[in-house]
Image 1 (spheres, one colour):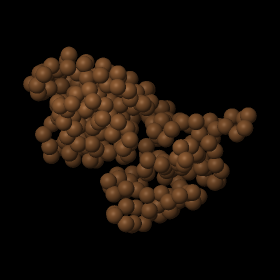
Image 2 (cartoon, helix red, strand yellow):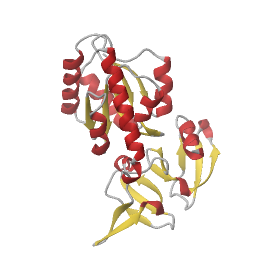
Image 3 (cartoon, one colour):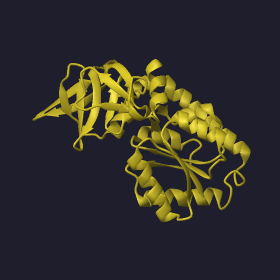
Image 4 (cartoon, one colour):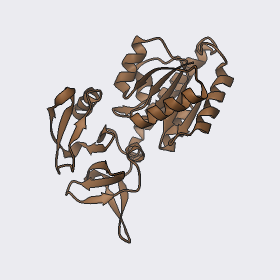
Length: 265
């Protein structure tokens, strides 16, 4: 079985790879991709996999956008930390969806479902082409609906805790979220710091991707906080943020193109 993984969290991607190889040792992981842009380019230039695992939220947008840019003829298992999007995706052109953190039993169930639907061999040969086209058109309709109503799906504020008080912080006042010593913090544009009770992955799933960008594994940044970006070693970008971040914030070379597209959007 040939598998394509589209996942922008390195640890999640490696865990998924390890679990797949443990359950199906003959699995060939064709590639692990981090962004919509990379996925579209790879799918256009390479033989199709038998199965894809697509994280719904990626560095440069939603994996649903891949369906708008390229025709997919292989089944997908969606992964996500935020079930609202997974449920919508599950209803169209998907075998199953996995909620993070992903466990061995959940993957085993999804693989068994894949085998029961497609059987051995080439998934395209075992699937009616009209059904594939129908599924893709259904997904595109869902994407259009989600875009039309996206403002109501994103968080307007986050709750933070200060001693015995719960305080709402308006999302538009947030400069960035960052992970430090396994604790997630929120920094406002006024440079106020709060502790969060959610991980970065779940936070990103609730943010408008036009306003916030997952810079790296430790940081999510708001468009409002960026002063400048400068070239750095190994083709990375070093960001200058206001207020200044407690540690340097880099954009890796694999995400530079996605970041530039986001910043100029």
